Image 1 (cartoon, rainbow, N blue to C red):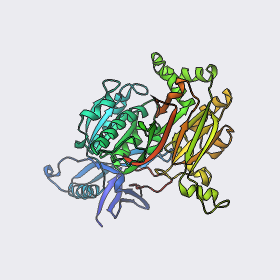
Image 2 (cartoon, rainbow, N blue to C red):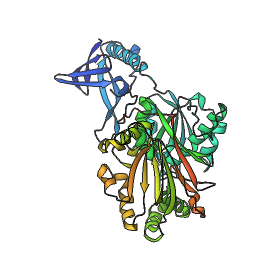
Image 3 (cartoon, helix red, strand yellow):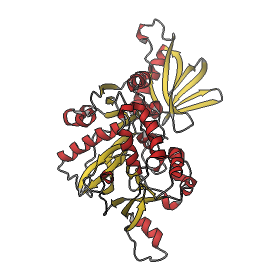
Image 4 (tube, rainbow, N blue to C red):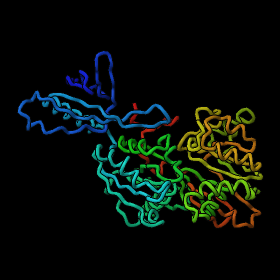
Length: 466
């Protein structure tokens, strides 16, 4: 174990290199910083130019730590002072330790949507993201979206293989457009039939990092547990890679598109369609149109046939008392509905999995949450809509008598008697798609993409956090 006598922030201390972390001892106070959480250390003035090896040299140690609230991370700086010779050896050993940290990117390509969210994502990048990348010695190529279809068109012409990570800085819609294009290109290269909902997809080679800078940033909540630019950037620096599923959305045995956070049919498709139709209002449409929609527009219901596909284990648990020898995997029911929404992870809407009943806990990547809305009054829906992203308890769902929550592997929605074009609208990650028939199948496809994150969910996943 190597030890160095130093000063940290002006106080006498001992720095020790132990198995998984850097130990800093100041009297009776000890601090352990995991190597995976150390970003880098400044190079001081070249020690070879100094006349005396004992001349003091200062350097800043940059590291990551949790803020203690809302799963957020922050970058901290610790000033270390030591003799030139000790500093040289300390830095050399630290670089060896950091080199052993797996999956850290050294070169990334960043696709930035400059008009998403508040329209200041370029300024946010320069102020909050770029300084961290420079400290971490991560080289980057920045691509600023030039047209509305730039994200859709980029996969056909750009060589992503030169980079360790694709960073998408924008909203859920930007991610949806770009990663759909990448997935389709990857499956075409491998002769995978994307219209076969049971086909296993070839996983994308390049991992995805998402920095939230759009109007809708639900993917950040799923991936990092919060919506925060600095936290997302620090997860990129740490470099943990996790396999993620996607939704395959199919109509008439053809792929409509993949989605990465939610697939919604009914009310939440109608609402986004109304918001998109008023683009002349710019950002104000996200405030004004929902108010108009819920107060003055008729909230429609539809007669649907809903087929749910469960994992065999869950159905066994539900039925073992009545019929232990048989486990149903599907059930079909005709009902009057207002909205159906599939969620890749409940946490995207603030629903804490740890506080749910055992029957509604989901195994991330193998099943997904389904919110089924039956007809409800206008003001009940307004109250629900306002609180949707803030709910943290099971009681939130139980308080809505029009809402039920299920955990499934796939579902099919059919409207056999529909004659309206409004029944052809589908909301995928906040993007509106038009179906060819009022029938949609939503299937969870595991391990289709890789996300850069060390955030630990309630289920078992790989992480660099120790």
